[in-house]
Length: 488
Image (cartoon, rainbow, N blue to C red; front, top):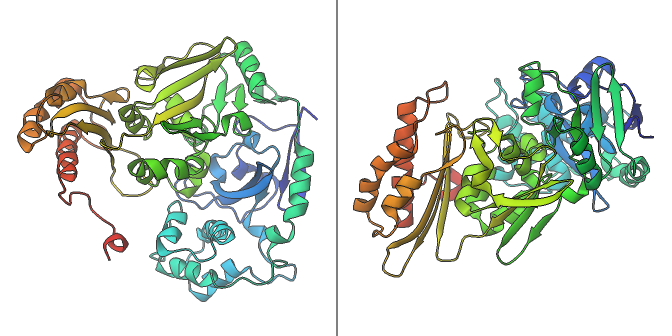
């Protein structure tokens, strides 16, 4: 069948031939299936009340991830298993251990956000047998609660880690082999095309099919994770067509490590890239941990963050500082360019008609170099960046600056190098006096604007102070604030 989307909803096979390109999973669940345990809170992937699990086959294995149903388009669900809170209770109606723990620990008050917390904790319960406090907090970054203060919910997560009855009790463990077989049967070698009125969605069968489609539809909207495009629909009420979904393409899902760096496919999520990145570039791994919540990191892709071209995207500044290279692809073949050259002006990138981002190569910092990335927000977790600065420094044996790359987001119409500042530093001794002398050069590099996240004056001063902070950290000063459990 190449005119319908097929997936499993809890235990039921679903086939849809009349779905629109921007129909969300949340609307489908609540309005068409009356599965109202999944709530709408923010409609932008912030509050987690709409959290569900989505399972997909990867390398022959079935893996489940928590996602935000409010910004997850139906076109991204082909050959997946969607699991809602209604699926957790036992056949006799007994609560799942995750649900029971929230009852026992008084982890619910008004109850509106509770189903989302249940699903996030369930996802953690499936993958971690004895999670640490920090792992629990990370799993709950994308879930907001106005009532409980979170402590009862964390206690429930700690309690449920010890509650593991027979595998036959848990619906996903009990049916795993069956679900795998059913998802294999849904795989297709044909491109799926669905048209409803004037709207069209396309699910390419392969990377080659994608290149052919985009050569014919150069203005099509490419959707990988929809963590940004979803808001075009839910907040801006934009009508998008045609929409091409690429999150299923295995050719875009690879993470390849080498001695010099790591190549990340454009369809790899933040969660999928985290292990390889954090192992070799810990500072970048810490930054990824602050991008959205777990649900957003499970959906959002580094390739999509780059292709979107936002001046406050979190991944471009550190990748530019590291000297990342972008590979673009079209029917004509591949084209490589330095990532910093991809951004031309606000809303404009160096992408020819029919081209798309295929992969990103991220060089590892040299052993003697020092790298840092700083994300400045109003709240620490799950917030949009006001200013993001990244620094890569190389010194010689005499502590002279032989090379430095500085890039910022939130300071210009695009992610941008601080070339005037770099010029003031290269060839100089790495001292506080050198840093103080270079700070005014930021005024030549950036003329930021004022918006509700920060004033222009705040941004400019913050950028200068981040250079000072980077210097202090490189000479051993305890400039970076540590979380309690990191110093206890």
